[in-house]
Image (cartoon, rainbow, N blue to C red):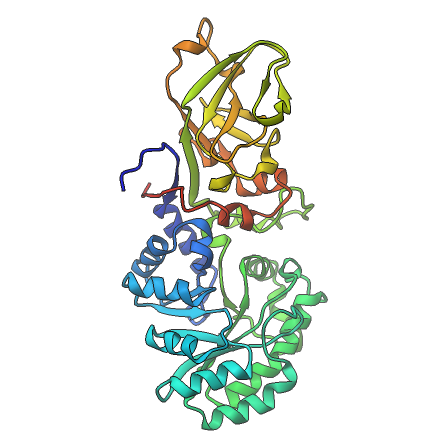
Amino acid sequence: MKQIRPTSAEINLAMLSHNLKQIRKYMSATQYLCPMVKANAYGHGDISVARHLEQEGVQVMGVGLVEEGILLRQNKISADILFFGMFDQSRDAELIVQHRLIPVLSSWDEIRCLEQVCSPKYPVQLKFDTGMHRLGFSLSEIKKLVGHFQNSSLVVQGILTHLHTAENANDLQASSFEQLRLFQEAEKAFRSSQNKTVVSHTLNSAGWMRWVGLKESGKMKSLPHGISREQGVRPGLALYGVSPWSTDQSLPANQNRSELLDLHPVLSLKSRTIKYHLLTRGEGVSYNTTWKASQDSVIAVVPMGYADGYHRLLSNRGVALFRGERVPVVGNVCMDYLMIDITRTLRAGELADSLKSEPVTLLGMDECGLQISANELAASAQTIPWEILTSIGERVPRVEVNS
């Protein structure tokens, strides 16, 4: 369908390639890499992102739902697709096998469902709970699992765990290294009983960035408990050029790895002004007039609202980029619209009724090189950058650019 509303999310595939190259730069050829494309590729558009990653030689990518994996297969994605969710019915298992998804198993019920429908030597991966207490087998089940897979139609291709506080993965005494120590029990058991090619992966974006910091600091030479230096990586936020560190987090010198690693945001949320209002001092804007002009002001209407993923909490808190300047979002964000105060951007003698439609950037980089980061929006909306990105709705077209 032809785009009518002038609001879209620009997806810069050149920046996606750049970020992937940076991630690979700090990995060895034998480290397991599984870029995450779940949740519509963190709001970036899973089909186009997956296609581009495949063109860049990515052999494995991760999704959170069976439906997400099926959608990728229906759109000709041939790379291995790791499915990180759970399922509990034979019909679900049939769909997994039919679409050649590799499930990450966390329960015996899942094992039984798959064994009923799969062909011999169907690949699976096993998740172990080392402290997150969300999904995964208990470490106490390792011996039973090893014995079961000696005579199963399923083949354990890989094992994994999830660090609950990956921000401390640069501290050898903190919880992340305790989790890695516990996970070693599973690594040793499966690599000795199955084969040495069983892969393992543990690091999300924050964990991987801290791991890079350890390598650079020289601490990697003395990892405790014989923990491997080559932890597998599942980059999500970093792949899309967004830092996992909050903007107000106090970090020691050289610890903000996103700057050091030269990662760049892939997504920019853009629109255009569609109407202007000249307000006199004291007049209000939007529902309940929560903002009132302190002087004669020019307000621009932008066709983007909370139904599109621009959080209502950004009312009177958010900013936009207009004419190369940061301007405030004023009044309550509506379902389909928001308003910005452009008064100080007006040129001498410029009148509100003479203004034409002009570009507005709500997230990402504008044509002047100014930027609003997902972290900045998250801080203003009292949330996290993951939610900012994944909230961008289906009504917002994703438009590929390559520059």
